[in-house]
Length: 423
Image (cartoon, rainbow, N blue to C red; front, side, top):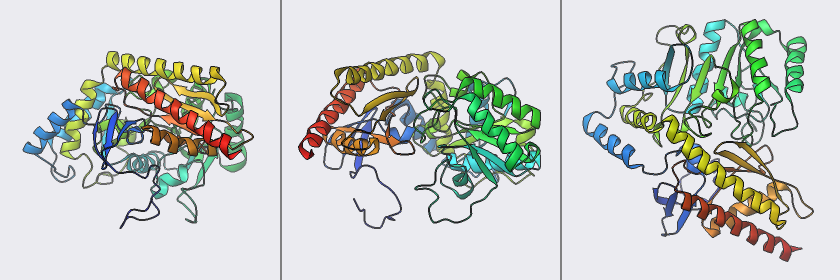
């Protein structure tokens, strides 16, 4: 679908235009209703138009819409920094800067790591995703579609395999690749930072191996390498806890946050150890819109709503419903393309396998259309775009979740009928 005056370089998954939303439901400009399992690609963990968020945002607009913090600080920015210090589960005092987007947080984290270490080399992981801006782009663990026709990108950046229980790479293999990198490509004492997602988003909702995470933390400590954990998609409750890194038993030196941080308003952050965050010369961090007052008001409300108890309850409910539906689809034997369930908590993906009729990616591409026609919006992921990622709001009512999953099943049934006719 082509939209007038919009660059064709913007890829669009669903050729519709939505006008309004309420929690996990949206309506397009023709009045059609959908269950939203995309959630702004992980932005709407608290759903569309959460009443508390609406209330605080309206109140903030009446008071102060914006002040550029680098010029004239405002109370909202300071309040978010204080709230983050309590919300992020690390043992050290947290220091932060607010940004407009996750990609901008990534870019600034690279600046911090370079300034703090005096080094330039970065290590990232196959299938990782960290943004579309130029330096963040080079961290991404696949070429298409992000790096095509762009030539040399800021570096040096090296990639190693991502170890996960949901992949064919284990901790020993990933450590061997890292050790080889130090021996063959770049010495460890020239590496500024290692950037990794505790649960890959674009990569197919694969959780990082806990054993590898422990060993990686040790490598960074021994060699003075900054460990950056990217929780832009997995953070703010997506997995059923505040941040996924808590499941790994390690702490980051720098943490990247974004997406659901402000319930749909543009706000992100890089936070971590003060000695690192203070290493950039004064004036080297900041931005005109970074930490906008209205977005800050939303973020404070988000953190207040995301208590440990609420997140655990939401996550367990959503996980149970997804796991039950997946088991039912596999047990029925009707959907041979439905493969393994990936991810953790409420951050779940379903792998679509190749069959004699089509590749997994082709099956999933057809399902996106069939499911949309059945009234549910879905999103692909994975290097081969063969992993269905489920990003319904954590606050979705159980009956709406079940309705959405039932509509996915209807889409699967339509897919089988279509492929049978084609055969």
